[in-house]
Image 1 (tube, rainbow, N blue to C red):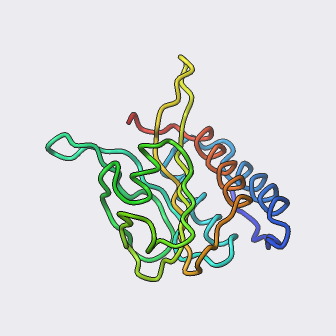
Image 2: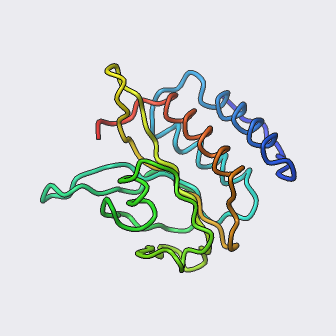
Image 3: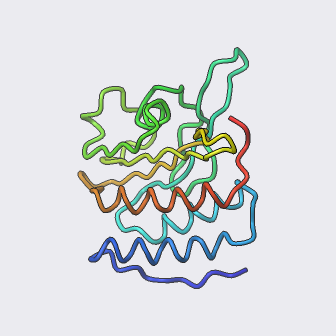
Length: 176
């Protein structure tokens, strides 16, 4: 399936995110592979949102010693940190809290991990998949960085949470 290049007008963020959500759902329709879907989602988000320098996913893994960590998944942008301990940095903190974290200035976030020194602000959305029992299983995070201070606001939070829900539901994620 090909995807038409679309310009999203983020002067009206809620509308732009609705259009982006529609296009993401169409892009992922019929594909269940989490790697393929995360790769296409990262590419779409990176190309659609203004003022980004990184957009991608981290998924849970275990070290050889059995410790829990996040490992980089599909992304767009400069090379990234490969492994992040659960609980460390913005991604690891969002994984523990199971809530979206918006960081207007990464230098003011205690424990921030600087994978790209150009990043000035960040938003991390946990990926939670509701199982048969109704419990939400953590399957990863969507991480989006910007070289601009205070790039992300509540409209970005709501829009990226909607996109995260689409990618999470559309994909068969590995067991955490």
